[in-house]
Length: 142
Image 1 (spheres, rainbow, N blue to C red):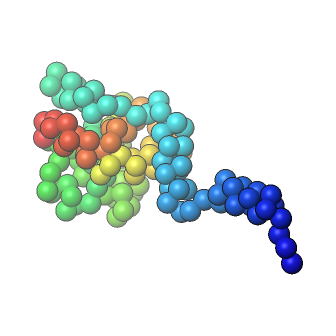
Image 2: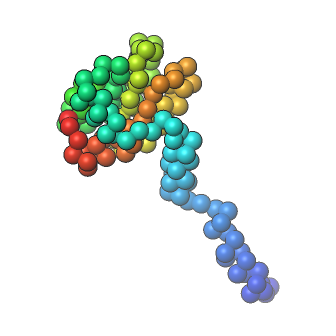
Image 3: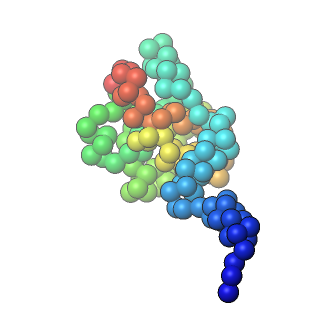
């Protein structure tokens, strides 16, 4: 059975457009998260400014593992590891009168935490863009 060259080329070029690998899906998912949750993403310098000005109208939750937190963390951050469900289990104790800042390793898990808080009626929460990786890269205060 012969397959025409045009049919073969059509399949060859069309298939990659409709089929993606898990890695491609993960990348697409990350950018979809950034667009969907853009209003909740802040540059780390915003939080640094609040800390330096002595503001007390916020809380910073570090949702990385205890080991990562113990290695390096922002002074004053409260460690509630996402993977251990500590963050989720403590939600009822979160102040609704303060801004909630969330920092994860590279910023991606923070999206899940923000979605979780939105689903539980919270209004003023923010992901630190790029997470702790970005914080350390920019050599910001610890």
